[in-house]
Length: 289
Image (cartoon, rainbow, N blue to C red; front, side):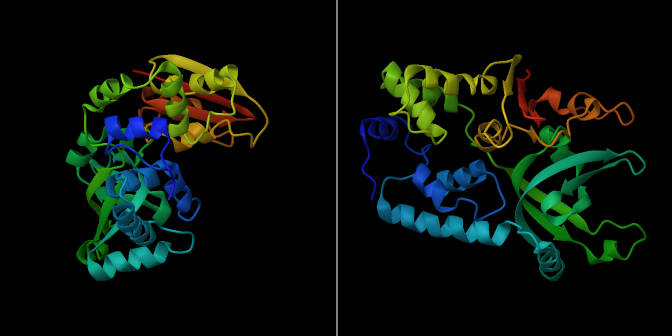
């Protein structure tokens, strides 16, 4: 069992219920086709405790849910068949949506299943507008309607409900500000770096500040930053893994239509929310109001 140091103890006393042990996250490293923050979300729900027995029970639940709800390569048809046989199936996936003007309705896309025309009601889209601007990971209840499948151009799959992968409390910043009072400036810096999986004890002041600077676009409006460097050096890893509000476009796929607005359809681009673009060895980061 890992012993908690002074920073851990202060974090537990002020932020109990919001903490995730990074060694637990590594337990599921690369086992399932989802970003790290999805695993952290589940660990935060079921393993937000310092009691080892409760943690062990929570780990079993997280393992079971990730195994049963994430779609690995080659399992797409298996999950579709389960939806057909059972009526509904629960999955964890990145959901996006678009307006089908011909039918005056919205359709959702679930990439892990290769589905691009999933029925979804307008109330869900209105409530979760981010699915129109790049999408977000969510726990999704996917249904199958055999009667609709018999119709010409029917869309048998439908989103019954979804739950965003994020904290449910809106006043978390108040709790964070209250807990901050228990830390010195140096301790708080190490705590922030530790929260993204970096142990700061062996870093000098300049290295710590450089890592903190990379996180500024998450909290500062209209802040732009460009990172230059060879491929595979971790430029985009932080932005992809640490937050469900980040969007990563890699492999030179950033276009004017995708970033700003598609002139043909009028669909808004990612610049309306958060953009993290990596192209030709550079990362561009921007957060808009």
